[in-house]
Amino acid sequence: MPICGKHDVLAGQGYIFERRDRFVSQVGSSTHSHRLILLHQLYTQSTFFMLQLLRLLLFESPEIFYCLISAVFFTLLRRCSTRCISH
Image 1: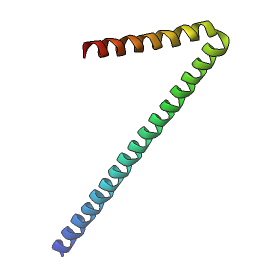
Image 2: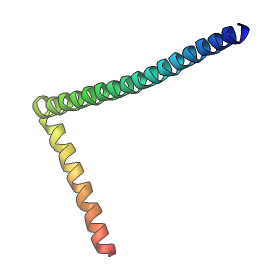
Image 3: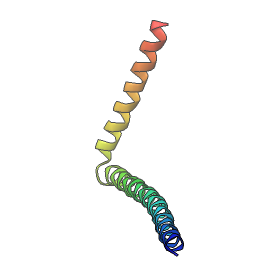
Image 4: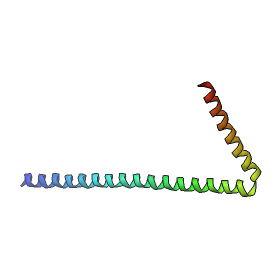
């Protein structure tokens, strides 16, 4: 009788541990998916912000936009020319 009782207690503890492991794995996976959702939201918001900034620069102050574009263009041109000259 005590062996059966002990077995039932151990079986119950095993069930609790199994449930806990399953819960931990579910929480871990939900935490992972929550992180992916947060990363997606951050990417979406940053993309939206960059598009708003681009629209603002292009339509509200085009001279700043053209200065930025020309600065990027001439920087790339300078890097390419120094790289081509060094080879």
